[in-house]
Length: 296
Image 1 (cartoon, rainbow, N blue to C red):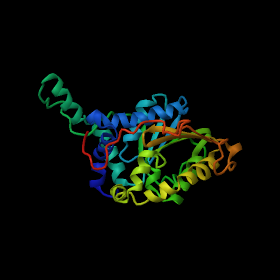
Image 2: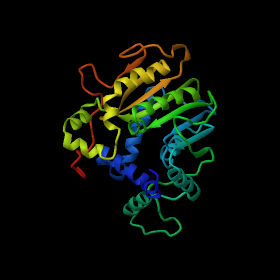
Image 3: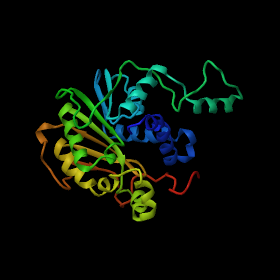
Image 4: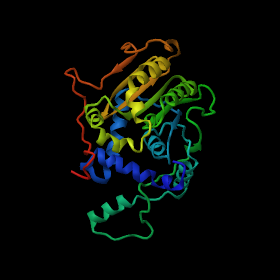
């Protein structure tokens, strides 16, 4: 991620991930993908108080930060933090330029049979709406340099699987430190306990295609139970997790200092897990393309 090329490609790469998860929606696949996490988090009790401060760790070019700003108009400040100065640089410039989406424009042309308007031409993946509440900054998610108990929500969207296990634990501990009492940690991630990912991982050749760009994916997959119970649950004391798509989960952990360092492995008094139905099936159907498919 330490290059301008990677930073410029981040939002189109994100778009392609969404399209593969929800192929029947075409270019709107990413919107459906992100909405799935939003809905799951809301059902789990995700909440931003009036004039709250939201910290979006691993924000990339700010796609998730901008979305959080749109979803939570009551928030006073949304701070997006990423370790890559290139990603943050592109994100800041996008907020300044406020480009329109070329994909949305092309779809509109198809509907009305119109032509390009030079004054309104789309030049970017997404339409960017400036928001003075948004601040993007370069920083380490494990060492944010923010004051203790200074934010209401910490968001980690598709970040944990990118990290070695020790770094993931450090990030969770840092989130706990900067959150106010009763503040919330939101995690949205790949679920390798879902049948879809479990099946894919059982095929070494197919899984190698996914793992090629994800060096810590095996550690993440093998260490999920430890991460859930011995990292998040021990740190926060109250955790809810549910399926967001047929192969992803959302999690809300509430900072409860009275219950810190209680519980442990498989302590269901701390973790409320609704990813699976009573019959053992995953709660949501998988809509993702197979690895070898480009479209349905």
